[in-house]
Image (cartoon, rainbow, N blue to C red):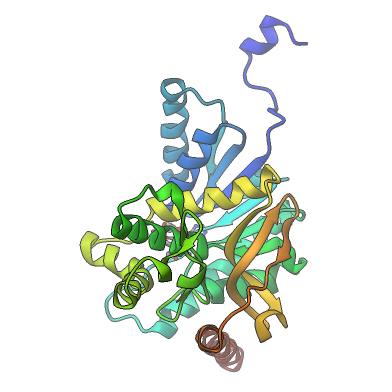
Length: 331
Ligand SMILES: NC(=O)c1ccc[n+]([C@@H]2O[C@H](COP(=O)([O-])OP(=O)(O)OC[C@H]3O[C@@H](n4cnc5c(N)ncnc54)[C@H](O)[C@@H]3O)[C@@H](O)[C@H]2O)c1
């Protein structure tokens, strides 16, 4: 119990779980916004740009009285306030700019993800890490190698977003509520992702039994192209609302120990015949991170598509090793 005088002196420690979002850009801001609305966690936004995380946090704090949440929001440029976070979300990185090669982007984002992971983990060694920065599966490798924590605590966000896109298109095509649609997208987050229509359903019925094959194929292709479709419409940026909400779905399952089964990029050690790579597969998410990797029975064709997608992740991992070796030889 505290006196009214003490209360008037300012907010005391809340006792709520703490989520730190590194990178207060479009996706980071959306994560903070959707998470604040859930009203059970305190949120720290961090960015290298001075004023950006502070401004976004203050704006969201000033939204709280209107929308009625008590999540505490703060922003900063150092990691002090992130100490003892339960979950750390990494959204820092740059987008590919005109004239920039894939290697340039990979080199820059590797450096950023390595540096923020190291600093964030120093202050929160027990946190669960959710990686969002692209190229997603490759950045999961960087975070995992840097954090040096069990694989259960490094999880990439991509499948929740990709399957949300698939659900949107299925609901549209079948004229039903999105709530009655579930979808499964496996593989790396890129052109080679693998929407699995046999496991994508309307009220439990696979869409392969509802829609003509060419219609199913068109929905799968639109899903695989989902990120590019938004970029071509927005012209000056990429999707952030659905990505932000998808991260919050994962945070919820972790912090509320809901044990949702969600497709996420995780480090496979033999599951699905894949060894030593981050690839998107369904996992059960709870308080400690990944509680279980769920192995779906796949047809030969689905399995081949998943292995092809894993090979694309391997190419990026190889490219990162080459860039690291070049950096060492240049030093
Ligand atoms: N996994 C997915 O499904 C998915 C979906 C959408 C976006 N993304 C990726 O998420 C990332 C963020 O996207 P965005 O639209 O928010 O970009 P953005 O440019 O709006 O935000 C990125 C932020 O990172 C910050 N930043 C850069 N270096 C930093 C560092 N060293 N420390 C702290 N902050 C740093 C920048 O200042 C910027 O504010 C991109 O890599 C994007 O490709 C992934």
